[in-house]
Image (cartoon, rainbow, N blue to C red; front, side, top):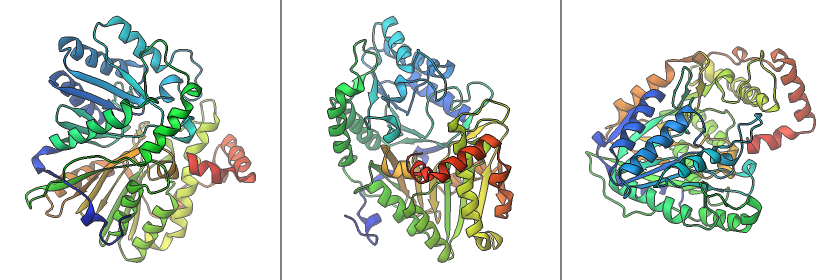
Length: 446
């Protein structure tokens, strides 16, 4: 196990020329770039996402993949999605037609198939999903927390705001493809969702257990490169489960290294205990801390009061309760502007950003929500960047400005609503889960 003092020094790195690192700033730009990249692909396409939805945007992307495959049958094309998520409808919506039905429909209509692999990280979705990020098209890594559907791709009027980065680095692309192929697709627990006779989850439960055990010991494989003063260093990290999780260790260490500035984005304010502890230590050290979090109405689980309430709709309020408690405990730090909490809200769009910047030298691009679920249950990864010569500073500052343009600065915890002001259905739900102490359990899995 790497010690705190030498963790960064021990990390194997890949070298990236700054001109090969590109940031996109809007969901529509990401959608256009993804389609363009698919159309221009000559060697391989590996798309990885929590889900590829049966809606207009999802069908558009799957159609582009199939067109590329029919045009060039030698092109490697594979999609990886969560096994469980692909075989159910949206939460709270009854439907007999799942995303897997769409995959099968496309496969039956085309000569050359595009396999869509279901990745079962755990036997039940509530205890772990495929939250791996990073798609590879030829030698480009397209890294985003976004899944593939209407709102993530801003297909119509609404969008779900995320981060979008494109990194041209052949060795990084090869390493990530190798992991997808060898550690995931080739395992018996993983099945092609196009197949008419795919197994039921209970039939592969032993395979799933073995699969998770293998994932817990896995890492990206590559030959380390030296990094010149004209380049930035990048290290792909992966982790699943609480024990010996190098990604979790890396995130904690990253925060512990902050000396001047710490900038954190998370869509759900529910830090794991170790992250909360490191943030608290950073504040004690005098570090300027900025936290960007979505307003409860910008949460993807939010249900407007005018609509029929479902239990899942209580989550955004629970996250706001966490945030209010944190803000109240740090009121003096907020007053002195050492701690700045930025609440994101833009019309009826939603917020899904995650990531960390430290002292304009270290950056984490990740799908990790920095919550207990990510820490213990889901399969997560990240790209850890060391930029000691500030090659990417201007680009990251532009990205930060883009993120902050639709935020409100919290000057006191009193700006955040109290439970007494929540809708009655929410108040009843919160009282119920608090009375039976279920809130402690919920915070670990949501």
